[in-house]
Amino acid sequence: MGRTAAQSLVAWLEELGRISDEPDGLTRTFLSPAMRRSNAQVTRWMAAAGLAVREDPMGNVIGRLEGPTPDAKTLWLGSHLDTVRRAGRFDGALGVLTPIAALAELRRRRVNLPFAVEVIGFSEEEGVRFASGYLGSKAFTGQLRPADLALRDADGVTVREAVARWHSLTPGRSIPVRSSARGGRPGDRLIPFPSSRPAPSSLLGYVEVHIEQGPVLERERLAVGVVSAIAGQTRGRIVLRGQAGHAGTTPMALRRDALAGAAEFVRFVESTARLRAPLVATVGSLTVTPGAPNVIPGEVKLSLDVRHPRDPARRAALTHLLAEARAIARRRGLKFTWEKTQDDGAVACAPELTARLEASVQAVQSRSVTLVSGAGHDAVVVAAVAPVAMLFVRCRGGLSHHPDEYAAPADIGVALDVLVEFLLRLAPPAAAAKRKSSR
Ligand SMILES: [Zn+2]
Image (cartoon, protein in one colour):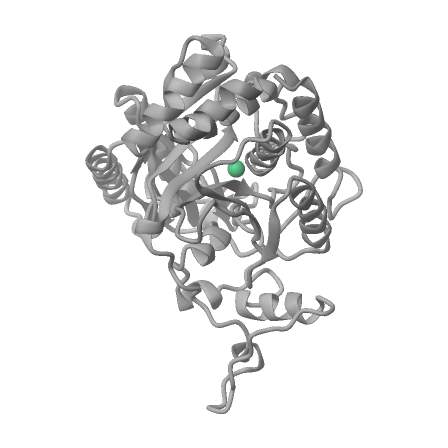
């Protein structure tokens, strides 16, 4: 099919990848000037594909293709438009632009789908600015909580204030204003959150196309694969407190070295996860205090990230790891604390929607493979209100969150073909007949 459709999709990805808050490298964070420019650009592409575009209070861009009747069900397609710092240009963007290209292609073929479609570019997924992700999809699906709006960025600005500022700088936009008569803070008067939750009965589901961010498809020599589940993840912070002291005068036997204890724990985390595949567990950051070459480390803060596709296995592993951390602390005379900062259950993709996606993959690349997503995605949040399915696209070396992130144009073309095939298969026979005649 449409080489031109795939080619323009690849060109769009390049163009969007140049919209950045930083001159060298791609950084596009929530409610930044670059986000305003990328939303405007995505709006133009959506409109050209025949979609009616709106932006919701959280800055999500939504392009809607109406169904044949007002009561037609709606299929959601999308991903996020924000990025990490020094990002690649495929993470997120691919899942917003591929659906636009697919709908443009169907329009070119004059196929009328018997359902409505909304393509959503979520404004916030990566959690860069407010250290908490999924703000866009939470708002879109009516799951935003007051605590989310109270989160602060590095400058002390809350989400609520940042959103209000974003809208006050949008020319010609009328903002829903909530009275602050009861003496709320200035940021309190704008944006009636949470947005209303859509009725599940009106939704066909949500499909997200995303780069794999891992090595499985490359190993399988396949352009795309279907996600069966998204691993649950627990994150938190451990603090080990010992006693700082002079590195020259304190005998070894009298030390309470927090870093030596932390090192023991890091090794234990690695060996435990190796024995319990598909468990993955990581200590990704250590903060050592006071952190001087001639001082015994008095305190260490460690991050812990534990993921598994099955929740009971993740919980059991976490219990096991924390018990060992306590035991290490006891042996070494350290104080131990644990603070959980994130706890997301595993999400199983919807069987029926996933089966259709698999059939579409088989139609396009003859073989399909299913894989578990170790990373979280907008689909995790959307799964609370709609059936979800995900298509992964091979990326070179499994590399992501890096400027060298790369998905080959041919693989992007396969993903586009699969999505077009999927949309046609989701349509009942009447529309399918039209498709045969136009092929
Ligand atoms: Zn992503």
